[in-house]
Image (cartoon, rainbow, N blue to C red; front, side, top):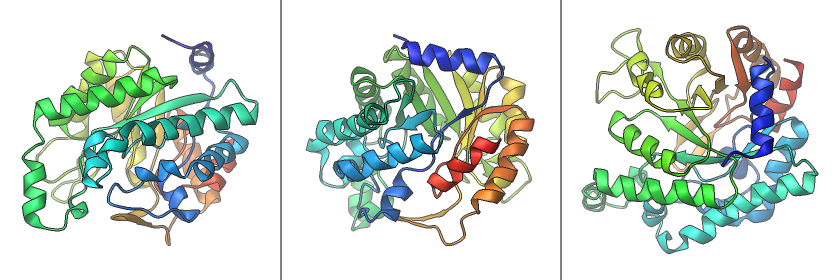
Length: 310
C-alpha cells in the first residue's frame, strides 16, 4: 500500500525537486545522554521522549523524512543484548516515536522510513570468543530470513510509509533481505556502502571478499526500488558512488554519509565536519544528480538545517 504522502514526495522527485532526509539517530541519542549498550542503540528506543524530540528537531530543521531507530533492533541483535523478548516493545516504541513526532509537529506530509538492516550482532557484544563463535553458528540463511521477514513486516504493519534498507554491503545477506522487504508490500529504498579498498583504488567495502561497488549494486536491477543511494561512507567516495549508481539505476538518488568514527558501542564525534562544510559537499552531490540528501552517523540537527540552502 502506498500512502498519499509518499505519492506526493515521489511526484516532487519526478519534478526534479530536492528532498531532505534526516540526520543520525543513534549518535544523536548518545549526544543527548542516552547510554549505548550491547545492542548499540537498539534499546535506546525505550527513551521515548528523547527519541521523539530528535525526530521533531529534524522535522523543524527541514527534514521531509524521519527514519525509525530500528537499524539495530532486529531480534537477533536484541538477543545479543539479552532483550530479545522485548522485540515488539522496543520496535513499537521506535515507530511510535516517529509517528508522534510527525503528529505533534502538525506535519502529516512527513514520511516515516522504516530502517531495515542486515546488521548482525556486534562481536564486541560477547564476552568470550566461545560465545561469539556459538552465536555465529546460528547465522544461516534460514535464520537471516526469519529475522528479516519479522522486521520488515513489523515495520510495514505498524505505520511506516516505506522501508529504508540501510548499509547494504554483504552480498550473502542482501538478496535475503531484499526478498524480505518485498514481502512487506510497501515501497522500498536502498542505501549501499563503500570505501576505497586498501589494495586498490576501486570502490568496495569489506576486505573479506573482492567485490566492487559497481558489482555490489547490480542487485537494484532485480527489484522495484523507489530510490537508491550511498550511506555510511566517507564523504570522499560519494561523488564516485553517485556516478556508479547512475550507471545502474535511473531513479532518484539519495546520499547520507557518516561523519564520525564508530568504536563499539560509541561514536567518536570529535572530528565531525562542520555544517557549513557539509553544505559545500552537499551542493556537489546535488549537482551530480542526488535528489535526497541527509546524513547518518555523526551528523546532527545543525547539519540538516543548513541543507535548506541547497
